Length: 67
Image (tube, rainbow, N blue to C red; front, side, top):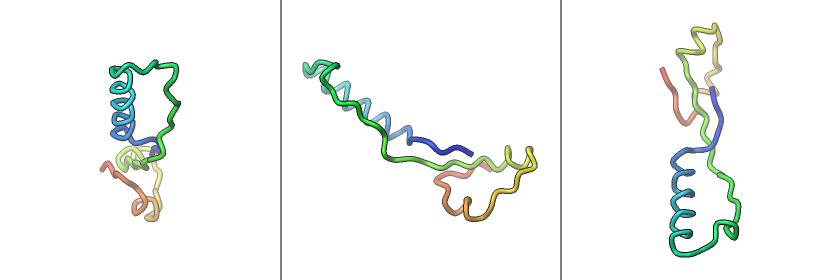
C-alpha cells in the first residue's frame, strides 16, 4: 500500500517549469510547488503474501488496486 503524489501531475508541473526556463526565467526565481493531488495504491498480492487483510473501505477509497 502506498499513499503519495500522482506522478502524472508531477510530470505536468515539471513540464511547466521547463517551459518557463526555456522562455528565459531564472530557475532560482521560480516558486517551489508541492503536488496537491495524491493517490492511494493497494497491492493485494503483496498483502496476501504478508498475510494482511485489507478492509473493504480501503478497496473503495483506492485510486488503483493491483491484484
